[in-house]
Image (tube, rainbow, N blue to C red; front, top):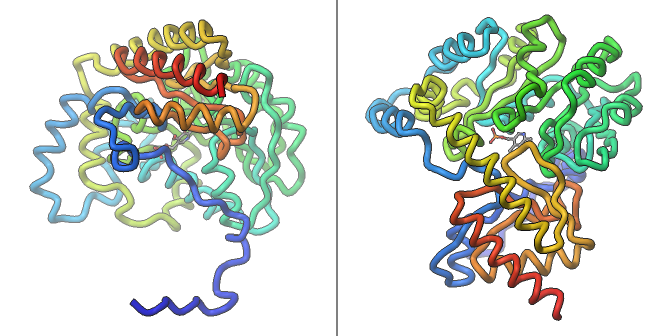
Length: 377
Ligand SMILES: Cc1ncc(COP(=O)(O)O)c(C=O)c1O
């Protein structure tokens, strides 16, 4: 093949120079090919530990034959079910190709070069990227020591040019969640030119009595809430999430979204999962939460110090980026994929997703050996 000719000079938007591509957790097949290992355990992307709910698998199998047709662009059946489930009108809901795509839409619709998005850091990188792609500035506030967003520090970053303030709770990669009353006070005190977003991707794992962003919208709060089917509902591969917010915003986003953003199989799977009557969600969440305590104790027994988490993952900060890098390689060589948290702003951290009990115990065995290997070197 002859060398590819260069692109015309200056064709790329200058804003993209500041955008680092998202680096996903490494896929199992990739690691298997590289290391030639039989058994690989992926605890790197905060997915659910089990297959989609049986009702979702059955709904997808039944719907496959109909996929000759474009999907319902409005995702009406799913939107109606969400509306009933959440107690908000359908016109306050937008379904997207994962929350990731809703983040891009929000940034595309709202942010121009010179505008500002305020968020905490370390946190979920897509918010940062979405703003950077638009040429907008990101003002990042430090977190509290427990890994939750510091709402006072966040408020202090707001300027007259701020359009969006994002609260990720539970926060990824740290797992900390903000207090419900403090959140309500923070939202009440926001200046009128700012729109708040509450990213509740891990909502289902929150402790009883924690915040409920959709409840705040129901009570008339001016905020946008994002939630996903990728985590507790175990549909990460199908890509479906939603936002709840002012109908005016939903209409605005309708101008910039792709018509057939949410594929037909994702729509039926999400609908079947949401309306599942066999109690899978509650059982699985309970298992993850209990396993999270077990893994937390196991890591502490190895002199690691995970942050208190209300997500389906734990962040361990291991002292330095070098040690984190070496531990990551040592774990990989034992077939365990975790997530180095550098891209999320915690270069000395490894984020470990809670898996099935047997996977978690194998991770702890591998971690024990990896720590010996790395610290002996
Ligand atoms: C805080 C947070 N928000 C949003 C997302 C994106 O979720 P989705 O799979 O729906 O795109 C993630 C995924 O890891 C996340 O951690």
